[in-house]
Amino acid sequence: QLRALEQDGPLVIVKGDGVHVIDEHGRRYLEGMAGLWCASLGFSESRLADAASHQLRTLPYYHTFSGKVPGPVTELVAKLMQWAPTPALKAGRVLFANSGSESNDTAFKLVHYVHNVRGQPRKKKIIARQKGYHGVTAAAASLSGLPAMHQHFDLPLPGVLRVSAPHHYANALPGESEAAFVDRLIAELQALIAAEGADTIGGFIAEPVQGAGGVIIPPPGYWPRVQAVLKQHHILFIADEVITGFGRLGQRFGCDVFDLQPDMMTVAKMLTSAYVPMSALFVSEALYQTVADASASVGTFGHGYTYSGHPLACAMALETLNIYESDDVIGHVQRVAPRLQAGLQHFAQHPLVGQARGLGLIGALELSADPATRKPFEPARGVGAHLVRCAQAHGLIVRVLGGDIIAFSPPLIISEAEIDELLAKTALALDETLAWVRG
Image (cartoon, rainbow, N blue to C red):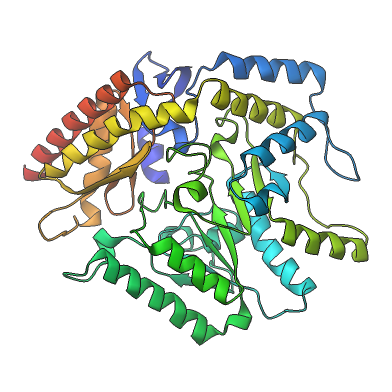
């Protein structure tokens, strides 16, 4: 809120130390969001600083245009192919960019490109979900299902279709079971395809677990049935793993957790532990061959960014992936995540909490004016924002999402003792907010 920021000023962070950050006055904060879901290795990993220094002294910049690449690109691509979650992606290619927004924008473009090449010029619409978040470029913001990202921007762009988020807590009908809820969501998807015409729908984009929309974890059975519908109608599936990729959910990718088989997959954030900007779009072998044939006939593939495959970013991504492997970071997530999830579930009994949920090292507390009836607070009261301020006063940084949802996404290196610190400070913030609400 820009006017409020003018009045109050920002919190100025000047130093990092493991999972903590330090402000200009020397106050320490446990960073319960890893920045923006992204600083997986914390804020002071010396091996990444050393890798950056070495690369900057060796080759600080080169591009990936006109048949050229900087040296680290080849090594990173080989490593990413090893990490890719499905055979189709392992055999495919990678397009580099600088942010998740850009990579999702690239996927948007490829849906158009591929279907034009395949002689299906009407098959261009893309289905996205309410509460989805895919970035802030014009195309990515259009795909995102958060109204504040559209208002006054004249978005979404034409050709974006919307279906419901798989959020049983908020969207289920009274007494509706998770299985019945999934039945209804699948019927909604099928009805939309029938109404629009499958020959006009080129893609479906979704996060395995919706992040900025509220840490929404789909009910059992949701993903197999969605994928079956997409396959039936030859609709390309884009998996947005910008938040969930590289261990956040306790496995390498959300695709591994939910057995997803996407045609394209976007990653960013924890690819470099956010130490430098970088993202990537994995493209299946089948799509690559279509694009390659078309570019041969045109004479060029008319897409790229000045900083695609930047050598500094590649070096940082390589070292980040090496650390994930050498330090068994994903195994560490599997070992400590139950402590975070048990602590969040303990808060489910708090008078302010309607639901506690999470998976791996991501979680949320959805606040409620009346948990028994799932009644939300009036947005104008700013209950979630008040809780975040209380937490910050106690040295914990968390984030409020739409609907008074408090999100947690700490660095993957967080220890059990630091999880206990996070939970203890959350408890203080909850109790202080409760007193404020009642007062």
